[in-house]
Image (cartoon, rainbow, N blue to C red):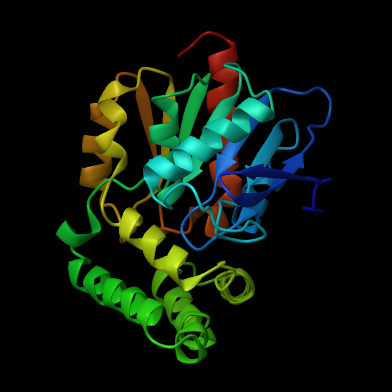
Length: 291
């Protein structure tokens, strides 16, 4: 699909300059979605899903320290810090309780936390983090990645920066996480990671955010949430098995789980259309009073 119209605004909170990308809805408008991208991503990561939701206004900030947004000076780059600044931003943007909240991957944790302090009409969690990385089947890889980020934050910038922005590292991640055998999709994922995986503001912010991403789950906040919630996960997700996703779903007062086949943690790239259809179907049912 062709890229949607995009309005770009700049906001200032906690010492950070935050860029927000708003995609106005086509008529008839069916609502507003406030979206939170994942670790080491920016608004580009959700572009495919946004393109398949033309009748919704979608507001996607680049989280402080990533993409076009600078790091915060007054708040930590962790779940609480990101939720706090997104709450401030929502207030400035006048996003009221009729707005729907969406989070992908690490953004699912931030969105869940935000939903405990601000009212939303519904919550969408894409590839929600359903188990602690250091307690999962991928614990060894998580420990290695943690050491990698911490080391690169401490060594001289002339060495650390190229290592963190290494094309070899992003290509390896693409190779491991992409499940599709379609060469066009595989190429798209690889190019997206090459283009945006290195878009972080500082090595310290990156390490701080990574520590946060492996130290909590959506389950830390789900028992406190009663709003209608849709989880969309990949059956082959390395960061959350079908069993832990179902356990997470059951911890909500009102949640549904859609499990997509032949995909892992990259549903926003590999299964964008299916994910957008699930979101639209859920919102239509919500509007009809069926949740």
